[in-house]
Amino acid sequence: MEDVKKRIGQKIREARKAKGLTLKELGVKVGVSESVMSRYEVGGQNLTIETLQKVADALGVNFDATFK
Image 1 (cartoon, helix red, strand yellow):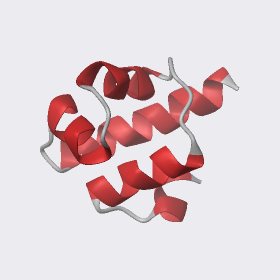
Image 2: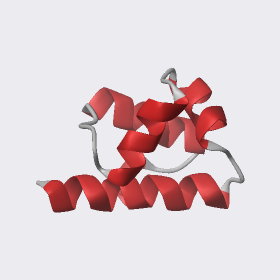
Image 3: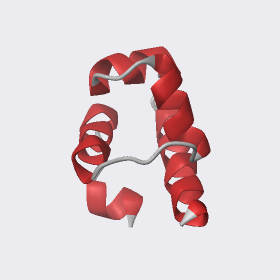
Image 4: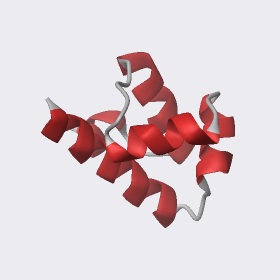
């Protein structure tokens, strides 16, 4: 399970950086704090499907294509 969380976190980080967003900016768009967003990216906190969809929407990426 840890590998899955880390892999998803890495994909979030890559997409965030590609969009030129900071952790704080993405967190605001998703509705979470910068520190929570950081924990998502390092795989240290579980994401719900709903939150992961919010992340995908905030990044403007396709949920299935990005996080499968």
